[in-house]
Amino acid sequence: MEMAVTMTGNVGSGIEHRVTRTGLATASFRMACTPRVYRDGEWHDQTTTWIGVECFRGLADNVSSSLGKGEPIIVQGRLRTRSWTDTNGVIHERLVIEASTVGHDLNRGTSAFRRVNRVIASPEPEAEAEAAEPGGAEPGGVESGGVESAA
Image (cartoon, rainbow, N blue to C red; front, side, top):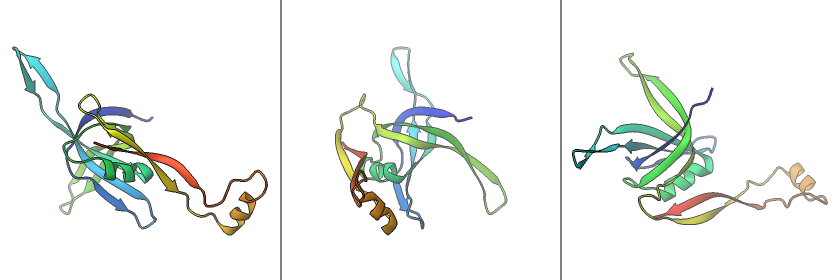
């Protein structure tokens, strides 16, 4: 069973952007969520919840070029538990969101949208020949995908 979540908060760390040995783009950062309550005529901050956010492929590229520490965001994705054992043999766990969507929280500011054109990797020579046949797609074309926003 999948646990889908949507959370709002602030980017709480720098965006760590990497490309794996297999060419997969990844980006990760910490998100801070601090609920506020109105009590006795004043606003009070409650305890901050910190959660890791992991992004992959085009979303990773767009997140790393669009978001900065302290910016208000909304994240949607799957809640996961990451486990590891430290050098002392102690098992640790932390919750992360495997993000499917990330964007600026427009309740707290404005953002400008820019579409990103991504180049599709060249197909194998056999696939290029098939694509060149009538009704086939143009080889080495450009796909319109991903999004990027700027504050």
